[in-house]
Image (tube, rainbow, N blue to C red; front, side, top):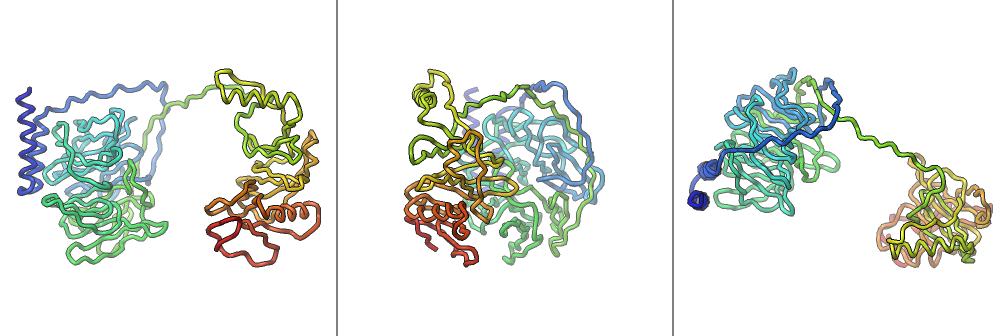
Length: 527
């Protein structure tokens, strides 16, 4: 065994030594052969977890989400994934044929250069690893056996080696495997690795960025910030995705002349690099005249010369099994609730009561009540020594009778009013006021609205503005807050003109809006 391992290591060194002068296909053939000698695949199937009774779901569909697509080397068959299963359809469309189904999640299938095998990513062993099977879905073999990091985006090199992206941390890696088995090996590719593609001769790697890596010399050439490159079979065209504002477009570049043009204005939106890569995989047809990819949920055939996209019609009979959801019945208490988190506690000017927000409502706590003080002191002790266990909550009561969610209470400087903000998903938020006399009432009071524009509001006590962009409209309790809250009080009592508070500055109705505000410093708006 020791002699075999030494020979294996020497073989690897020899392979890297000839990589500089030999063709990439030959070099990777040596590496792949060395990996095969390490031993045949002996992966055991992961035991199926007993999920209890399964519910069978069946339906027909002609579209899918984030569908990875490939075309067979003879150009007659389209291979794609849908809901974790692998299917094929004729290039002209028709009924989909199921290759691999069941509870396992299979995705990102790719044909081998001779069309006899497919590589794909599957969680059959509990993690997203690289697998290979015959083109008809038989004779499955597991290649990668990583239980920590997932694999994605497989591709075949011209010599039959399978290369896949390993999403390790902190750096993504490229690994190569022989379809016959073996442990695989890590490629010497650094930097951000997403959407890997190979030139037809296997010499160049194209990676999202787009950067072209020469595997013979190690030189890297930057071709622009683009995603998911793909090279045509004759090596002339480079297709890629380019984000334009909220849209992602498909472009093609002539690698001979350098000309670049847009083929499709809007395709599946690109996402940041993830386990699914930046874009669903797609493929050129063998003659290089068309690109087959998923657009708006449909599999399309895009003409490279004109950019015309034609939908490939399909009908997929989907069969899925779903476990029954786990439900645990638990009776919710309908009495008093111990609020463990309170927000924006505000002390009244006389120091006798406190107003705070809890569970989306405003409450009043009497601080001169001995029972309340004992409860508050007990809660402070509980926070310092959690081992003492829970304590009795402080007695409190609702401040208002409103049904909206209530936040950020703040007292006016004279203590006669309380301003706060509300929020509903349907009507957004407003600034409300309520007289301080309601603090002594047990049934709560009806508030009054003082803003006329719905939006995001905040009544924020403090002594300085945050050094950042503030919400749309703001009431800030600081140096000039006396003026702002006094105006709010006059509005609430029926005196004075309606006033909106915009970015910490007052604006009377009918007057022009202030210029766009980017920053605030010492309470002054800086355009």
